[in-house]
Image (tube, rainbow, N blue to C red; front, top):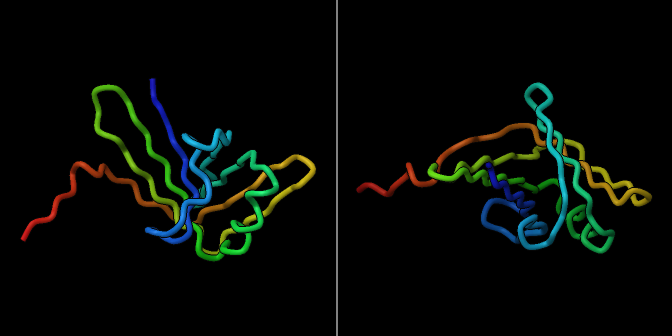
Length: 110
């Protein structure tokens, strides 16, 4: 069984706006050609800051399977649309590109 955690962050090392593992935010994602569409159930109080920084967002998925190293997928939003429907409390983020990697396979070599 795979465990997955989603993060929405300002820039790469910046502030974390959403951590599905800590915030209890439910989400779905779907690949649509080169883009990836994320649908998140987010309370309105979280949305203002996200929308303020929408041009600088990154989405990360951490996928864990027993007996395997964690796979990290970094999605860069770029110019992808970000919208919020207050009636359904649904945030939609469309990421334009992604990079998949296994952090354990990278090491600093001098």
